[in-house]
Every structure is written in structure tokens, then in C-alpha cells.
Image 1: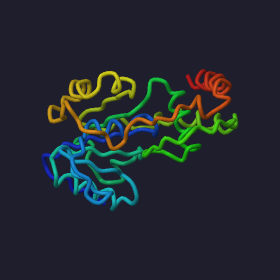
Image 2 (image 1 turned 180 degrees about the vertical axis):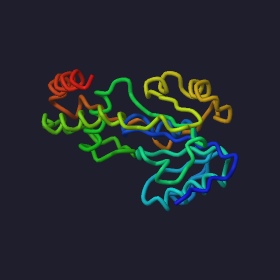
Image 3 (image 1 turned 30 degrees about the vertical axis):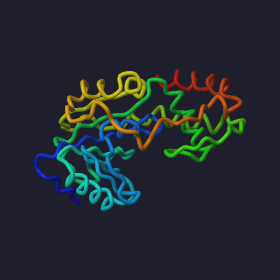
Image 4 (image 1 turned 135 degrees about the vertical axis):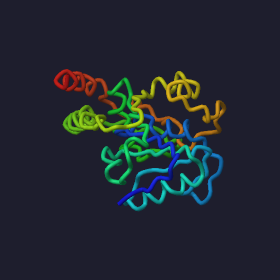
Length: 221
């Protein structure tokens, strides 16, 4: 299956393990201007997500390309280029991470507990103890998640962008790093704002989990 990208398309693929601010980053790059029916959007830069079947992803990519030559794709699929038949040389790969990997782990757990991954409410915390065994498995998997991304493919460019840098540097940082002058310096309200839930308010034994994380991270080095 081929995506049949139109010549001249600038495709920016944001790839991350989740809970790294990748949706927040997508909003920063894409700047929504219209909500059509809850699933399709009109963006100055074009946008799509690699979710569902490959056909769904390709259809989304083509819809975004019809809007603009600058297309932003958000995905957690490390094999997205091969799966969709995209030529790596047409892609600027943006690897989305957090410098504080423990925060990524805790954000995953907090999202599981609250049931809120992208659209958030002001629900009050219900503190609980999280299984150490469950945390160990999650932290180990997330620490290894990026190891098998094949950056040897002939991508147009590859950038690693950290959530913390996006928060501090905002749009000007992204414009500088990626050279994307089309990004609005004054983007509208984001569809995916940062999560308001603080793990220290939801997880009683977070300090013990942090000690476990330090052991796991030391072994992983």
C-alpha cells in the first residue's frame, strides 16, 4: 500500500511513546482554525494521525495534503514509513521525548487512573497506591521504547525534541529548530493542552516508585 504523496509535500512525522507532549507539539506545529465534525480538522499546516488501519491513515494524510503542502502527522507507530509506503526522503522525523523520563512513566499511570488521555476535566484526585510490579514493567518498556527506531533510513532530517524545551521556548523555539516559518507566532487555543492532573496528588507511593525507577534506569544505561 502506498501513500502516493503529491510532489512538493513537506511531511513532518511526530513519533513518540506517548505522554511526551507529542499532541501538544502537534498543536504547536499545526495551529487549528476549524473543527468540522469532531474528527476532521482544517489546519494551516495540514494535520493527520496514524491511527486505525493503514487505509485510514493514508486517507487522513491525503486529506491533510489537500489543505497544505506542509503536513504534520502524529503517530506512535515506529514502522509508519514502511507501513504506509512513504519514502523516508520525503519525511522530517521529529522524535518526541521528555528529558525527565520518570515524568513520562508517571504521566502514563496517571492517565490510566484518571481515564483521561487527551481531553481533561477538573476531577478531584482519588489517591491510591500503584503496584510496584506494574510500574517496573511499564518503566522498563518505556525506557527501551526508542531503542529500535531506525534513524538510519534516509530521512530528509531527524530531530529529537524534548517536551521541556517546547514548554520553555514555545513556538519561537520550534520555528528556529525546524526552520518552519509558516508556523504562526501566535497560535490559537490548543486542542490538546497539557494534562492538569499531578501525579503526586493521585499516587500515594510515588517516592517509592521513583526509587525503583532509579534502579531500572541505572541498569538500562
